[in-house]
Length: 367
Image (cartoon, rainbow, N blue to C red; front, top):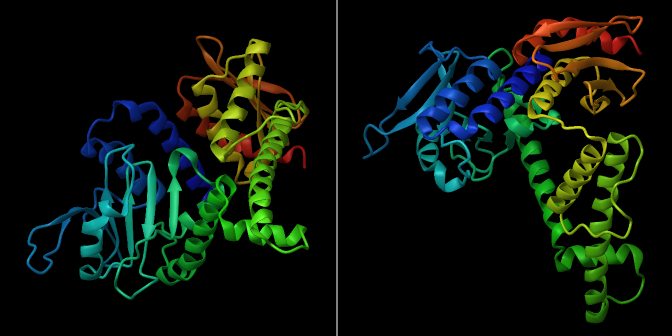
C-alpha cells in the first residue's frame, strides 16, 4: 500500500508542477490539489459527506457559524480537521487560529494546515485537547521525503489508528525539530554548539580567544562537510567525476544545492543534453513504482542525447526503463530478463502506471 501512496504522491507532484502557476485562488487550490490529496493519498471519498465534510461548522462560544475547510470522519467521529491556504502561501501558526478553536470543540485529535503542496500535521502532545503550536509531521508533495511515506500512511483511511499516530507523533515532532536545529547550526553555529565541538578536538581552556578562533573553524568545517557531501552525490550521479573543487566554499545548505544545480547544468551543456521537466516527472513516476521493490536511493537517472535512462544502482548494465521523449510520439522502453528492450507508445505520463508490473519485475532481474 505504501508503494501505491508513493505512486499517487508522484502523480500529484507532477500535477502541482504543471498547474501551480495557473492557480490564483484558495478555492482553486482546494479543488486542484487538496481534494486529490484527501482522495488519492489519504483514501477518503470526498463526495461522501459521511467521510469528508466541506465547510465544516461548529458553534464555538460566542462565535457562531464559523467554518473550517474540511472535516474528515472515521467511524462516525470527526478525526481530522483541515484548513487550507492558497498554493504557494507560506504556512504560519498565525494562519491556524480556526484550527485552534475547533480542535477541542470537535474532539478531533489531528489538525492539518496546508497550502496544497505543504501539509503540516498537528496533535495535542503538550496539553490534552489543546492543539500544539508545532506540527509533529511536515510533508511537501512536490519534494517528498520517502522516509515520511510510512508515517503518512498511518493517516490513511485503511490504516487509520489514532493510538499509533499519537504514539509516533512525539518522536516525529522532535526528530523534525532536531533536523531544523542542525540545519541552523550548520549555517550559523551558536556559542554552545562551537563550545561543544571544540571540546571534542581541543584540550585547552575555552577562552574568549579560542572561542573566536573555533567559531570560524566550525563554520569552515561545516561548509566543507556540506561541500564534500554534495560532491559525493554528484560523483555518483555523473559517473564518478567530481564537479566542485576542493578549494571552493559553500556557505550554506542552499548554496550547496545551487552549486549542485550549476554543476549538473555544466555537464548537460557540455554534452549537448537537455533534460526536460517532462522527463524528470516521468522518472519520478517510474521510481515511485520501483520503490515497492527496492530503496528509492537505488533508482538512478542518466540522460543521453537520444533517451532518458532509469537505472538500478546507477549502473548502465542494469536498466529498468528508457524514456524516448525526443520525438513527437513518446515511448517507454521496458526490458525482459535477457535485457531485450520493447518500446511502448504513450500519449501521457499517466499511461506509465499501466506498466507498473513490468517495471517492478525489471528491478528483480539484477538481484
